[in-house]
Every structure is written in structure tokens, then in C-alpha cells.
Length: 272
Length: 297
Image (cartoon, rainbow over the protein chains, first blue to last red):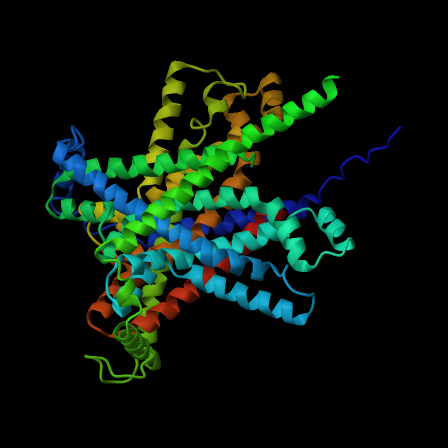
């Protein structure tokens, strides 16, 4: 017979103390944030109520004229183009950096650790700055173009992909790697024949998840003046053409949900 | 006899299971080639510009102006990051930005807490021991639809719409961020309930617990830590996005960033980026600490 030790009761006092501290912090944050807003002044614009009513009434129906649908379709295509190009560039930059950050390449030693730490710092810096802030800085430096926008998406996304990929490469089961090592494989071969194949499904599914985020990122790049769904939304908003805004919003939502559905199917087929 | 054949079938099935992912990968490669072709052949690719001598000269000029090594068009004086008063002024804006992010998470968190239960399939169809009804089923689809819509629209687009309705300040930005994250955290939290171990809830039900008791003892204790963890993860993303939302909703560092850029006060821009990075690092550390607290609690 196997004797299973009954689960020891947790020290109750500490358990409740942690919980109480946590709830205290969270409730304090909630109260602080709500109390700091100036609720006395006019929250709603003068005329904001009417604008709100007009905005919701414009949904019935949205602008479905063939000409405008064509424009929305073209804008969607431009958004997809920037998202796809941004993600591919992010993969090209992020994958090698992720491998370096995982510290699985090269011989064990201090230099390898130093490289990994440096790359991790660079990755953290890349993802600290939002893609649109990168875009504003790049446009100021280089002028507006598609490539600048693609680069602005690629840098923070490479920072995220690099970090996640380095973690995935490190989290693979160790026994097969030991097997490879004991048969004399170099670190590069362990990476190529052990770590990468084992981590690939997870890496693929995370990449597809990021693609969905990339669509949204590409849509808001309109803010620096590149064409796409966000750009058209801004134009229609400025002209108070709310039914056009709704059409464009619905296109954007459909696009994101389509990519979301695609990436969910990919993840499910990879079993993760 | 059946041994080898069944292994073969398993291999074939395994292949078939892989084909969707593989086809998707090929599909993405085709999409990538098309996109790059479109960008590089397109009129405004900027490939030539990006590698021209003049562009890099401009970029170098810009970086030197950020660092205060070269006088800009307007500010001939000392760089902003050497003035204590500018540090204090931008510090106040950083505080406002932090406030906006916390308010956004409060809005999203309270919203999710109020709505995530009916959005879980096993709650709405009574699998956890409740009763299913047409109303609950309809509510499930309605909330899921709201989750999908709020999630799919980016924060900045929400902000563009909301500044039309609300007077500028911290609140519209927080609402825009809150709406988008409400959809994300809501979907994730509903999925937590769906993937939950149904044992405790069913046991409670069969012991005669009411709806409220089941919620308090069967569902919340299991789902709450996950929900809070998601909320904290999203906070790390939100603090990076507050600046962007500030571009349009006139609150915090974002507005100042844009104003300074358009007035060519580049040392101010550098100062704001320093504050921004400080906020990002602080929130990352805080969130990691709180998440550790959740795990140990």
C-alpha cells in the first residue's frame, strides 16, 4: 500500500495576511484612481450628449454604399500589409535575439551569460516603448513612409517575441537535450535538433497570436499619417460622418476577429 | 496484425492534425511575400529614403537635438532635463499618466467582475449546477459579442471616438483604455471559469448551496487569482499605451510629448521619454511583486 501524506494545512495566519495585504492594495488603488478624477466639472462635452445619440443612431444602418465598401476594403488591405510586414520583420529580428537571450548558444561560461544579459536588456528596451511612440520618433527622424511604419511595429514586437521565444527555448524538457549532449552534439546542434523542434509549436502559436495584435497596431499607425483603416476612421470622424465610422469599425472588428479565429485554430491544431 | 496498421493510422492522423498549422504557415508566408512586394514596389515605400545620406543626416540631427547637443529651432536655452522645474512639471504629468492607467484598470476590472460569469459557457448552460434558461443563453452571446467588439477596436480608436463625447482630461483616456482591456480580460476570465475544475461547485450545489454561496465558495476562490493576474499583466501593457492615448485625449505625458514635438522642443521630448521609461519599469516591477503576492496568497 502506498501511504499518501495528508496535505498539511497551510499556516492560516500568513495566508490571510497576504490576502488582506493584497486586497488592501487593490482597493486603495481603485479608490485613489476614482477619487482623483475631477467629477464636479463638466464630464460630458457641451453637445456631447447629442453627439453620443447621433453616433449610436448612425449604426442603423452603417454606410454600405458600394463605393465606400470598396474604400474600406482597400484600407483593410493596407492595414493587413503593414501588419504582416511588421510581424515578419519582428520575427527576423526577434528570433536570433531570442536565441541569444536564451543563452543556449555557445559554450557555457561567463561570456555567454554576459551576452544573454545584454540581449535581454536590449529586448526589454525595445518593448518598453509603444509602437506608436517609435513611429512618431522615426517619422520625425526619417520622414513618413511605409517602411518606417513597418519598422516601428517590428521593434517592440521583436522585443516581445524575443523574450517569449527565449523562455520557450529554455522551458523544453531537458532529458532529450541531455541525450543529444551525451552523444557529443555541440550547443548549436542541441539548439537545432533539440530545443527548436520541441519549442516550435508554441513559438508558432505565439507568433500567430502576435499577428492579431499586429493588425490593431497597423490600424492605429494612421496616427502618424499612413493610410489604412485608422486613417479613414479619423477622416470620417473629422467630417462627423458617423455611419462611415461604423462601417470602418465593423471592418476592423471583422478583420481582427478573423485573424483571432485563424490563430485560435492554429493553436488548437498544435494542441497548445 | 492490427498493430502496425494502427500505428500507421496514428501517424496519418497526426499528419492530418498538423496540416492545418502547416497550411497556415504556408499561407502566412504567401501573405508576407505579397505584403513586402506591395510595400517595396509601392509608391511611398521609403526604401530609397531610408538609406539615403540625407535621411541619416536628418536622423543624426534629430538625435543630437534630443540629447541637447545641438540647439533646436526654438529652445536656445539649457536642455530641459537640466532644469529642476521641468523635472517637477513633467513629474506631475507622469503622476497623471499613472493615475490614468490605474483608473483604466479599475474600470476594466469592475466591468469584468460584473459580467464575466454569464459569459462562461458552463455557467450559462447550468453545467456548474445552476439552471439554464433562454435568457441566460442570450446573455452569454450578448456579453461575448461585447467582449469581442471592445477587444477588437484598439485603444487609440476608442479614444478618438470618446474625445468627441467627453471633455478632455484623464477620464476619456482611462475609459478608452478600460474599454479595450475590458474585452481582453473579460474573455480571458470567462475562459478561466470555463476551464475550471467543476468539482467544488457541484459539491456545493449538491450540498444545497444557493447561487450566492456557490459563487462565493465555489467559483470566486478558483477564478479570482487568475483574473487578478491577467489584470496585472494588462496593466504592464496599459502603462505603455497611456502615452499613446494621451496623444488624443489630452491627458498626462502623451499630450506634452506631442506638443513638445510639434514645437520642436526636443530636449523636452527626451525628458518625457525618460519619465515614460521610468513609469514602465516601475509598473513592471510593481506588477511582478503583486503577482508574486497572488501566487503566495
